Image 1 (cartoon, protein in one colour):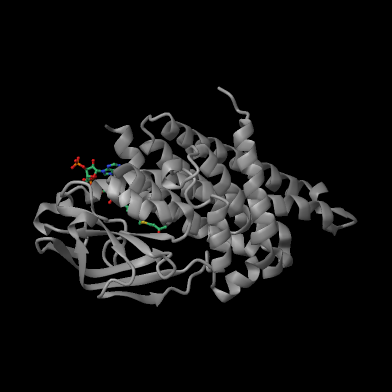
Image 2 (cartoon, rainbow, N blue to C red; image 1 turned 90 degrees about the vertical axis):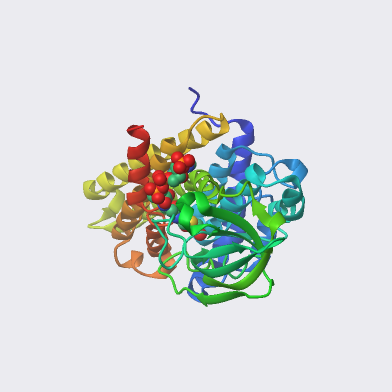
Length: 379
Ligand code: CAA
């Protein structure tokens, strides 16, 4: 077992750290306040290769491994978790899903622009009545010969407005349960496809999260991903990898808050000495660092298993479960260490605390991760 990163991985870490510090940090508080992500930054993320990291070069991607991806996710999440969720959905849910399960025509037409970042994608599984219970899809896609007619509503869709290409999960044969579900590639601008309400969120506020509505939207048969009835398996397999990305995001949020706390604790003085010299603060810093290190090992392990072609379902769920709890705990302690300063926006840690919460919810709540882990243990 080698705990050192390779030269390539160190280069990815440095490039993503530079981008985060130079390009993301300056406007991060304003973007959070205004709930807007700058399209120029998405363009730059694409140019730097952050939007299609694991996509093969012949489809316009970086051809990198999952470990590179999680390293970049951590660095970017240290500064801006809104940027990293845009990146994560595009990389692990949309590009990865298309690369593994799309056919050649779908890859040429959709994966190439997505991987180069000339457009971004969205993954549309959740519905008003289908969050954790993902089988309970109410959106329908009725077979109408050369096309399907899509009707329904999707909720909490990351990149809901800014995306051009959406992967939409829908029931084609509701009587067949999860075996009657399919996944479709749906382009924005198709008649009957409407972007609805933008959510006013607690965290990751600069990323756009919307309701999407479909009324008799014609989706060509060629845009179905995989064989008839493959949609639920598609969603589940894609989410297995997505969970590694969100675990890396949680790790980054925790690391970012920790680094700020370590620095602050050495600058801020109380009772005549830096607060880092008080045991109460030292104990907090020690525990934060230890939990972060443990989370990093779980995240890297899940990424490694995926890269080695081994089963990573349990490892991904464990990484997300643990790293998201670490993110919530560490960021709360970071605010505590900063005291009154921690409660105001200028010091960043309150944003990290707000951003951390979603990592325990999206791409499968912590409760769903426990269910996934238990099912794997009891197999
Ligand atoms: N990997 C691969 N296949 C899986 C799987 C997994 N993790 N979990 C289930 N499956 C397969 C099963 O093997 C089964 O297939 P077979 O019939 O061929 O055996 C099929 O899927 C149905 O499985 P279950 O009977 O276990 O289904 P279920 O209804 O009991 O529960 C669940 C499944 C694990 C609870 C699932 O519904 C789930 O993961 N829910 C959470 C959904 C989720 O993560 N949503 C996130 C939304 S996306 C998002 O947040 C994106 C964003 O914008 C950031």
